[in-house]
Length: 227
Ligand SMILES: O=P(O)(O)OC[C@H]1O[C@H](OP(=O)(O)OP(=O)(O)O)[C@H](O)[C@@H]1O
Ligand SMILES: O=C(O)c1cc(=O)[nH]c(=O)[nH]1
Figure 1 (cartoon, rainbow, N blue to C red):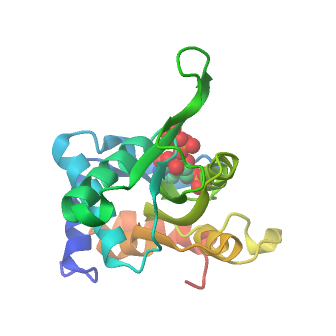
Figure 2: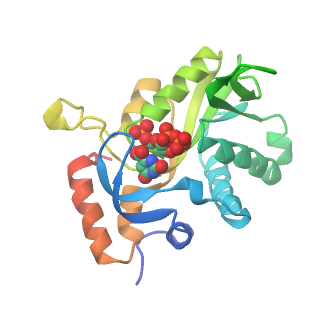
């Protein structure tokens, strides 16, 4: 089949399907919604898959007009290997430009011994911080990340995720704005959000029509209409 996606996106999507990173069935999301598809970034768990995903993040950051940043922050847990791997890839791509960029992540539970606390890696105090995470759905995880950055004295300058599910946190019939979580975050926090893939991309690039139909049905209910 000829895909509507650019070849690099199609190839990346096929890798995700083959490695069961993108799976189909019935899944309960953090938001409580039941979804017919799920993106399991924990399955980027081999050398070549971790390299493929972090290369995709690094290329997204080097080919878009991304604001300058000092620290990549990867929210626990799945953001941790993504942010650290992306930092390494950026250094490999452009060592002079990224030599002083650091990475940081949080612990979900504070450590009571040794160095203590719940932050690991480069201090975010007074730094420009870019969040690297896997998936954006209702934005709960992202808002928690923003609070951590503020508490640590950092300044959020941007966000990159692997998948923008294009979902509205609150549906219009329940009083929502009609904007997707990504659109709301961009407006409210005045920072750009970049994504490697979106739900529209999955619908364009997946070959199995039964799976496409289920994603379309889900998109009709939960995805923002204006992109
Ligand atoms: O946009 P949201 O509705 O918040 O949902 C998406 C987030 O939720 C999940 O992480 P989770 O907090 O479950 O942590 P994990 O990385 O430890 O799996 C997922 O990895 C995303 O980061
Ligand atoms: O919304 C979520 O909880 C969620 C969706 C998804 O596709 N992948 C994931 O890890 N979490």
